[in-house]
Amino acid sequence: MPESDLTSLLDVALDEARAGLAEGGIPIGAALFAADGTLLGRGHNRRVQDGDPSMHAETAAFRAAGRQRDYRKTVMVTTLSPCWYCSGLVRQFGIGAVVVGESRTFTGGRDWLAEHGVDVTLLDDERCVTLMEDFIAARPELWHEDIGEAP
Amino acid sequence: MPESDLTSLLDVALDEARAGLAEGGIPIGAALFAADGTLLGRGHNRRVQDGDPSMHAETAAFRAAGRQRDYRKTVMVTTLSPCWYCSGLVRQFGIGAVVVGESRTFTGGRDWLAEHGVDVTLLDDERCVTLMEDFIAARPELWHEDIGEAP
Image 1 (cartoon, chains in turn brown, yellow):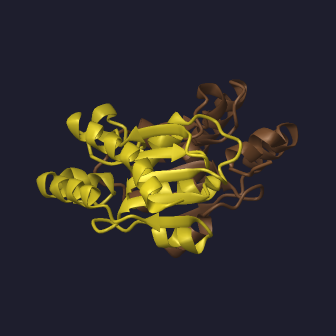
Image 2 (cartoon, rainbow over the protein chains, first blue to last red):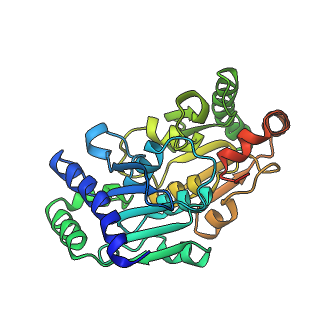
């Protein structure tokens, strides 16, 4: 898929991230697409909104997509490089491709996924970088909580 | 902790697994405990019950425990060796120890967790083995769906 098409998929995830921020939450969004670009599910981090630490953005998008029988041709698009939890999700369910908005503020498991055959594309999108940099500067304690970094 | 104490923690997870089976679901249960044995959260796989593929047993127990600021001294007890998704959860949030009911029917990421410093104990509990063997024999398609093995 051309990078311009991937950016339009990223826009869906970015809308989710911004919606999360507007709700007072952590601004990370994701969306799961079929190979033809059909949206299967979208979501954002809900730690603050629902008091639910299990709802990272990728998990929320995966959940919203409901039960699927085969993820091999699906694409997980996320504003931020997936953490180990969300990388484990991708690997276990055999999601074929991951499109990452940015990985400057966080690395997570993207290299591990690529080593295990997942097609990983890093867009290095400035909008995603700015969103996370501003959030981490404003709410460092919340950011550290969300990635399991103890005080 | 002595193995007899770990078995009493496993009993909580096993109760969850049996509750899931009674609901028509996948019989995998888990519970998250504090270092002193205080129960923080318990849950079971809810793929069938809620149509929610993101609620594996360990994830459900983690969710039920709500927002915690430090997981280093917590213990995740699960009837079945954690898949990559749930192993990723353990690694990302720094859960210090994992107690596994059985790993004969499924391996997942338990060795990977041990390599990354998690204290992993395998109880090889016959009740857990029988529960999973019977379930996999009765509902192979559901089992394969739950671990992302495409048809």
